[in-house]
Length: 75
Image (tube, rainbow, N blue to C red):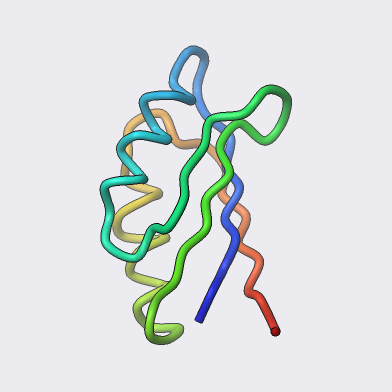
């Protein structure tokens, strides 16, 4: 299952967050970007349970991560 995750970051935190997210299992790409949202991520995991753990337990617990929005790829 592939998903695209976009998130907001606290001031000056986008690069640090992108690097931290890039190190997580299942993350294929993580980039800090100009504008809003601040970080774009591509993840590939086995199922919805793994996606839930990655987003809610790992990514959202990183200091400086604000709002996350997850888009599950259908094809």
